[in-house]
Image (cartoon, rainbow, N blue to C red; front, side, top):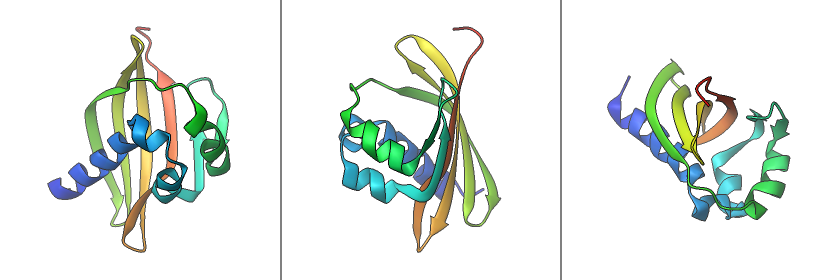
Length: 117
């Protein structure tokens, strides 16, 4: 898989972790696909509409992400698997990014607590 593409997807993922982007509904709208679905750490199910309504108003948290692995599913679909540490709790994360109109957008995300929490 192209290293430049991997770095682009990781950069976009990390941008979604930033307080600046998380509080910017316009930027979130640009990065998140209209058909977006998420299965959160709690098992809750979210859509793009849910995310745009709740995320800008959430209390900022520092998200430390690491151990990224990218899987090219096809030329316009990439899965990113990685780990995060938030408030001393570790999680596995998985995102799927889709290329549409020459822009990458997140179409799926899932968080799963790691057993060592």
